[in-house]
Length: 336
Image (cartoon, rainbow, N blue to C red; front, side, top):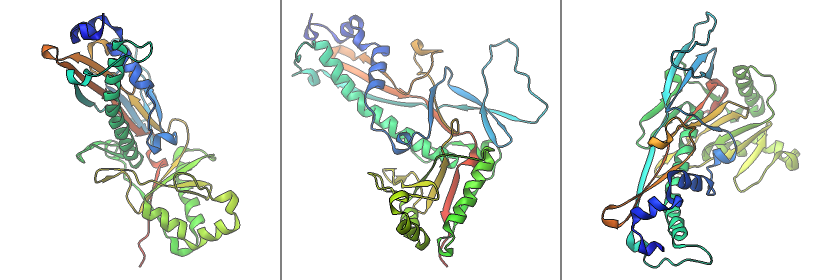
C-alpha cells in the first residue's frame, strides 16, 4: 500500500521507519556541522540514565558520584569534609509541523518507497532542529569553560563557582612588557598545579578577536615568529598561531547578539582526559525511561484530521569542567 492510500496514523503505526528509536538513530547518524569546541575534542561526551548528576567537590576537583541502588549499601568515604550537589541536565525541546501539502509532489526515487521518501523529508525537517541543539551545546560548553553556563535569555543555568564557593580568577597578560612567554608559562603552571600534574602535552587557547590580534601583533611574539616561522606558526581555516607550546585560535562564535567569549579575553584549556565533560540524559518519553541518554531524540505524531505530522527534537545535556581552576581565563591588561 502506498503512502497516499494510508492515513498518517496508519503510516506511523505500520512502519518502523517512524518509531522513536528509528528516527532517533537516524538523526544521530546525520552528519554534524560541529561547533569549534566540539571539533577540537575538548569535551568528552557520554550518556547517563538519569535526568541529573550528583557531583562532589573535594580539594578543588569536581567528581561524579556513582549512583547506588535504593536501599542498597552506600559507598564509604573518609572523614574528609566534602560537598555533594545534584545538577539538573538542561531540557532542549523544539517542534515543527509537516503538513499534507509538503508531500504533494513527493515521488519515489529508484527503489525507495513512498514511506522512505516521507521519512527522508521528516529527517530533513528535523535536521535543522538538531543543528539548533548543536549550536546550544557549543554555547553551553563555552560557558562551562569560564564556569558559568547561560541560557538563551542570559539567565544562569549553572555557576560552578557559586555551587562550590569558589572565587573566579582571571589572569592578566601585559603584552607591553616584552615578557609574554614568561607570563604565559606562569599561567600554565597554575593550571598544572590545579590538575596536580607536571606535564601536559596539548594546550588550546580560544581567543576573542581583539585578544588574538593583540597577541599576534606583540613585538616579542612576532620576533619569535620571524625566528621559528616554519615550526611556530600555524595557518588553517581557523586563524591560529602556535606560541609557548599553545595553539592560540581566534574564536568569534556568536548567536544573534550573544558572543561566546569576550573580545579581549582568552580561555586557556589543558587538554586532558576527564577535564571537560558533557553528559546526555534520556528524553522524557515513557519508552526512554532508565535508558542511557543520547545527544538527540526525535519523534513524529500524526496531526488531527490526517493533515500531516507534528515533529519534535530534544536533547538533555549538561556540560561542566571538573577542575575549574585548571581552565584559565586570561584578559589583556588595559594600556595606560
